[in-house]
Length: 349
Image (tube, rainbow, N blue to C red):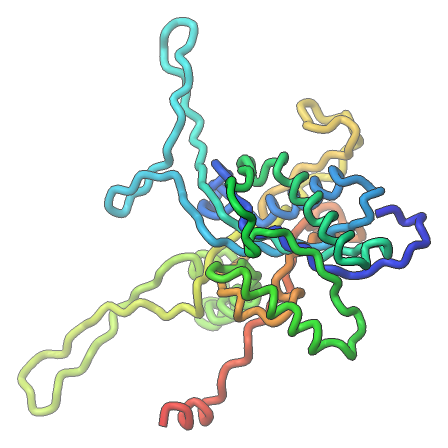
């Protein structure tokens, strides 16, 4: 959206429901696989805004993801899973070409954008036309390396129509804003939304350092990324000759917790455009980076109270020294406060 226009802007919520993606990249980072990285969706948001152009009257600031279906293209044998790989043509001498492992998955996702609209889009008809234009543009793009599939032929159902609604900006309309979000949220069921749980990583690191002061953030991340089982001794019954028994118990987990990549950390200074051989874009400054990981959680959309808890935004602080520069995605979700012990006792009894 052009900043030179003196047209008032309005906050809005854009929903593109049930986007079907075929053969999306299922290898989200060097250490994780499964659902595509959230950086793939923020990258899609940037590419979509550029494709629409500055004269479209819409600016995209954040994106939320609700997954309705995830089909990893794998073969399962016991505890081992193997990706379905393509067979490359043989070489000139007849030998087999090297196989580069690629993981693929089919997706059915709903994309929710936090946007700013020009004042010309206050009418329902104008917003509907713009939402359909954005959906048409998205249909010709790629998401996480996968192909966005066209809408299935047949009558258009209300659950698959794009939605673009104005969001009340006044703080006095907070309850109205929540009511609007709850109404839209029902359309995203059944499904699971991906939110950030950086707090779990910080809490687990503090717990590990209580026992081992040398514990690192990597130890906490690995501990949260796996199922941990430990042996618990069960005492024998009174007046019994039986020996105490040992039972393996899996540590409880606070929901559907997953390790996720959330961005990149700088490894070098910013190099001038065209100075790095093999760079994809010779007109943009270049910097070597490595992946940054954190923890995420899949939760049902009905547990999300507002738009800010759903959307992911990109964050970059150019004031930091080069060796500390982070390019990462952030999400404002905060888990609900735990129920007090005394209240839990009253509920149970």
